[in-house]
Structure formats: structure tokens, C-alpha cells
Image (tube, rainbow, N blue to C red):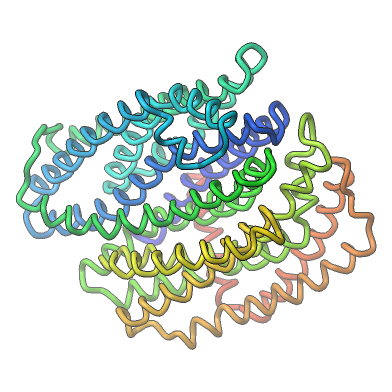
Length: 516
């Protein structure tokens, strides 16, 4: 893919990513407004985590492995062999999904027991998970379709699955909340998973016909080597989910509703990743993988460096402004219906620390993808093991004094630790990457963000905080974010002109792609 093709793909992914994130936030707002931060909502959060974890692990493993594996197999043995390898991988994954879905449907209590959430919430969660069980298999198939389509540069269908999933949940809650309560959300999850698969089937069928049609098989000469490659990638992905699990485990030990509050805060904190980070990196990953596969390491490192500058221009001001206005953001997003002032405060406290982590998440994900493109999954697994251990230790230290906010702070610290470790690994594998130059690049943008944040604090202190009402909080955010945003753009143009020019070029390419 050329840079312009990357920009066009990014425009498509950005559009659906923003729609998905908007619907995702609306979904969380509806759940908070209809059910509040209660024991039933805690149960829903944990049951949904079981379903989404399988899809998240599969999606990470498949997109990380299948793109470089397919390209390497096609280079070495031809397209026929590369497609055959994809079908064999798909067959084994399908078998595993069917078995796992059956276990979840028959004995959901075995999975819910892991959260140690007490008999009342555990019973509700088990009932909800049994309803959601088919969604586990369907989301797994959707992850498989996503990986195969992205291998061949098809991003529209995979990018839209989040829209379909969130729409299904919203429809379930709107239609059934009045009659069957929290169970309506579980049926919405199942409906959303069905819509995900239906959305991708037409494009998947076209691509499979172009590759010679589906070929059912369970063996391939390279299957064993791919399985070996998959072990550290899967381990790293599972370990990444461990921290999400421990967050829910520890939050379940707090007062009822705190687990849901942490989940709502995490949804807001992760919004920038979905709306801004993934649109660039999803189409960029195959390009970097191709550079490394063809031995063009200088081009791959240069693509990483330029992407890091663009991401920092977005992530650094977001991190600072989200930390400053966390409570007001929570008020605007969730302060209605069953989510009262206390509920908003419980969401705002962890959201401040999730906001701090945005910059680390952006840069860390770029580092992770770049290492994956060069087939260094072992380093990613090592970094993840260290980060998981650090996060759990910090959870235990911070949970008591800060409650759910302590869990968010532990996650933020661990994010930056992981970024540092993966950067060190990338520097070892790619000597062309100058740590000093990267540090100067990021430092210039950080200075612009810090000064802009200080400027934004002036109206923040002068204005009423706006908490308690939607319009008061919205007005506060508009003024503070507007002042901080204008200050940052003005400073970034002077302090980081090269990165600012790259970002402006990317925006022009995205605009061209949208017009096309």
C-alpha cells in the first residue's frame, strides 16, 4: 500500500471507528441511565468480559500473525499455498470456538466463579453469561473474518463490526429493559454478535472466491511453525487480559456498583484509542510488515518515527485535558437517570488516571505493532509479563487508599512501563532507530502540551466547575478545552514544526480520501 492508500484506508477506518465509539459511549450512557451503578450492572460487566475476552485474544493473535505469515508464505510458496494456510488456521479456530461456546453455555458458573463477586451478583452473572454464550462463538468468527479481510487490504467491513455490535446491545436494552431488566442487555450482546458476522460475510465471500474458494483442510506444511509463532503472541494477549480481569476481581471486592463505575470510566478512557489510534495503525501495520518482509528496515523504522510524531500531537494534549476535566467529562457522559452525583464522582476519579495513560497507550500500541510486524512476539510477551506483574502489585498497594481510582492509576503506571520496555526491545532489533531523536521529538510535543495545559488551568479555576448539571459541565469543558486546544496548536506549530507538517499532510490525504 502507498501512503495515499494508507490514508484512504485510515479514512474508512476512522469513520467507522468514530461511529463505533460514539455508539459505544451511547451504549454505556444508556446502561448507566437505565440500570445505574448497581449489583446487576456489576454482573453484566463481568459476564460481558468473559465473552469479549475470547474475541479480543483471537483478534489480536490473528491480525498479528496472519498478515505477516500470509505475506511471507505468498513470497516463498505462492498464493495458493498462502490461502491454504489461512483455511487450515480457520478450521482449527472454528473447532475451538464451538467447544468453548458449549462449555460456557453448559457451565457458566465455572467462569463466573473466577470473579469472586458474592452469591447474589454471581447468580445474576451466570444467567446473563448463558444468554450471551452464542455471542462468544460469533464474535470469534467475526475476528477470523476481520483478520482474513485485513490480509487483503479490506478494512471497511472489519471497521464496521463495532457499530453493528453496539447497535445490537442498544436495541436489546431499548426493547427489553422494561420487561426483562438486565437480561435485555445480554440478549442485545447476542444480537450484536449476529450482526457482526452478517456484516462481514458478503465481503468475505468475495475475497475467498478471489483466492480460489474455501478449502476445508486440517493440515498444512507450515501449520506447526505458525502454531509455534502463535504461542508467545497468544500468551501476550491473554496476559494483557489478565489485568482487565484483576481490575474486575479487585473492584468486585468493593461496594456494589464500583466495578460498573470503573468499567464506565474505562469506556471513556479508551475512546481516543478507538476513534484516533486504530484508524491510523490498522492500515499502517500491513505496510510496516511489508517493509520488514522485503528487508526495507530503514523504511519501516521511518514509518514508525513519523507515526509516533503524529500520534503524540493527538495523545499528549488529550492526556492533559482529560486529566484536568475528568469529572466534567463523566458528568456530560453519564450524569442522568439512575447515575446521580455520587455515581458521576465514582466514574470521574478513575477516568482522570485513564486520561493520563492515553499518551502511553498510543505510543505503546505503535511499538507493539512494529515489533509484531518484524515477528518479535517473544519480546512483546516478556514486556507483557513484566507489566502484568507490576500492575497487580500496584493494584494491591493502591486499592485500599484510592479504591477503583487506585486500579486506574496502577494501569496508567504500567502502561508507561510497558512502553519503555518495548521501546528498548525495538531499539535492540532496529539499530536504525535513534532513541535520542525519538525523545527529542516526543519531548518537544510534551512541552507544548504542558504549557497548553497550564494555560487551560486559568479558566478552569476561574469558572464554576459545572458539576451537577449537563449544561454547566459542557460549558466548562468547551471553554477549558477550547483555550487549551488553541494554545497547544499555536505552540506545536513553533516547537514541533516537522511533526505538525506531517499531521497536516495526513489530514489532507484523509480529506482527499473522503471526497473520493
